[in-house]
Amino acid sequence: MMENPKAVVLLSGGLDSATVLAIAMDQGFEAHALTFRYGQRHWAEIEAARAVACAASAAEHRIVDIGPEAFKGSALTGDGDVPKGRSQAEMDAGAPVTYVPARNTIFLAYALGWAEVMGALDIFIGVNALDYSGYPDCRPEFLAAFQKMANLATKTAAEDGRKTTIHAPLIDLTKGRIIKRGLELGVDYGLTLSCYDPGPGAAPCGECDACRLRSGGFEEAGSTDPAIS
Amino acid sequence: MMENPKAVVLLSGGLDSATVLAIAMDQGFEAHALTFRYGQRHWAEIEAARAVACAASAAEHRIVDIGPEAFKGSALTGDGDVPKGRSQAEMDAGAPVTYVPARNTIFLAYALGWAEVMGALDIFIGVNALDYSGYPDCRPEFLAAFQKMANLATKTAAEDGRKTTIHAPLIDLTKGRIIKRGLELGVDYGLTLSCYDPGPGAAPCGECDACRLRSGGFEEAGSTDPAIS
Image 1 (cartoon, rainbow over the protein chains, first blue to last red):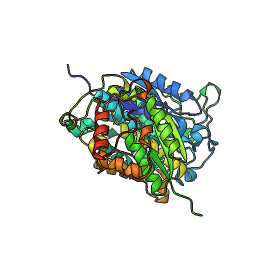
Image 2: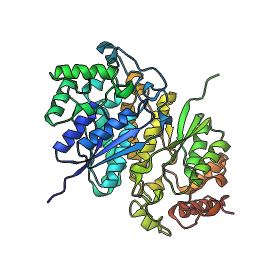
Image 3: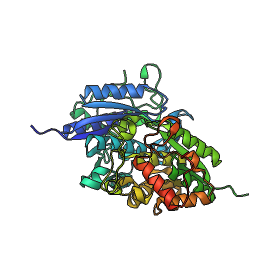
């Protein structure tokens, strides 16, 4: 029996990465999920990632502590207020204060290290089109440049010539399409947490950018959000 | 009075990065030194970095804890024996077991994040020619690819068009030339630690790859190593 190839899947606990995990497994990869703890305001996000990995029967789930020191200056790490009630135009206008410097670069760098240790050549990340304007490190050209760099960085590539691929299967999908795809694959979105600023019991605030994108997505998908009771 | 531009300088506590710190400051940069703690076998390395940053009067020195989980599989993190007494031919033959997967990618990713927070556009790293064959992420083409990726990753580059430069001033220098340059700039090599496997009191073993490269370098420079008593 052929073994399934291994892949590292970046898993945040949010809706997008839960969908990516399901897609990677649907494509036949043995999924090794990777979550980062980096001074986020709420640990509920980590717990959501754990629940998602477990429900999906991922082969493994690692939670890596990364120092918060490099991330000072972003609202997501507790240095400012999370913006609420921004319009789509405002979201389109530029990177929000929730932007974390070099975040995807750091996440993918860790994924690359773990992939090499395991002999995996595939890394999955849940960036998508809606994030482009706000986050420079969600653009396809960034991902292509990272992949090129990765294939110069590792012993796997330098000595064995085996190339790493960065998969971003959501890159062109709207939030509604992402949700539709995830529902087809049996993702339980009730386990996911998108809110930047959840209340007690991890209840979403309903007003931050992430909550607004999410509720618009469920509307577009013609579905209801199981995380909203 | 013009302020000196800020730069992030990766500082390991070894000879090379101590020299790079002196070079960055000599070039007029306000140096912000960055050291990683990642399950190395010996904390003496961190203490050496601290002493070097202090002696050089760096503007700041941050020590960032990064999870060791991504680095499993390397002798440097305690999973195997450090190789001793390898010949130059053996060192040239391929990445040694002290190779840490994606290490420079992860280090530079953090440096990029910190640089962006500070508004710095310059990152210094002490890779050099002697490391090429053993470590793929010490090659100039890797550094060029990282720089290109970095300039797609950040808000600074995406919105303001200001480009980040990865400086590797030792890239073409032999160990002897590095030491000569450092001595000209007043680096106290007695504070640095190169050994992969130091004994009590951080005494170098004298036999690992790093010790052998270092002693050859002092010989080439026509100098004696102040760290050897």
